[in-house]
Image (cartoon, rainbow, N blue to C red; front, side):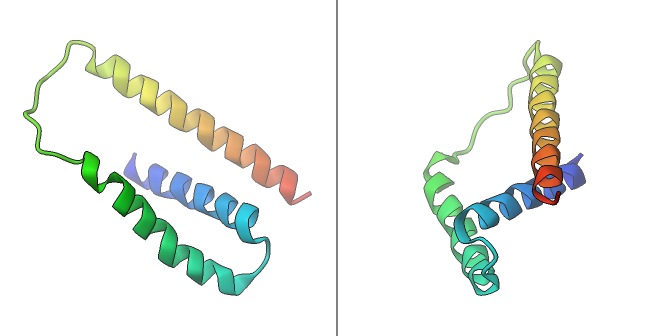
Length: 85
């Protein structure tokens, strides 16, 4: 499951690169440098210790999240295929 999300995040990263910089290869290094840093800085205030509480509908929430990820992966696959034609 985690390997799938690594591939999905790589596809999202690639689409962001093409949207922001086009085909400029030097800008890819810049994007690899600033994007993860900005995401970490923006979300570091939202992370806090929490007590683990088991919910009744954990599977439903997990499957909803999984369905959203599969939809996003399918959408990105279609976009990448259309771009390469």
